[in-house]
Figure (spheres, rainbow, N blue to C red):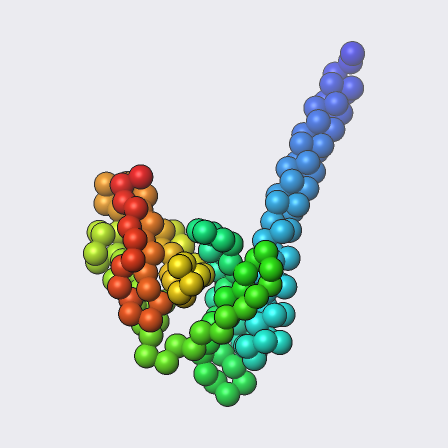
Length: 159
């Protein structure tokens, strides 16, 4: 095999690898973006959320998608969607703590150095936040927090 053939073969293999990697990444992200798109549509139809700014994927006893955002009347609300059967629950903020306060409470209680995610779903038939964090020891923690009170329901720490 001459030198130009080797170069062409190497370039072809590299190009094939790059195309394969990009295709894999694109296909991996497709289910998540599809779920988010469908959840946003349901949020607008059933909860009147016209300006969504939050999407969560909560998996505990069951899987739930949640969307939060402003309605056309500028009221903030969430909708929690059961991923399996499509049943929904609309949750208005009213006097409930906001996401920022939930995150700060978990960070303070468990010395979290990094919040990995915060997802809203149903746990024991109640709206519940799941906050995943990394603590100062570098280990993982998960805290379930009651949506209405902001109190910790369950903690798994130092995983």
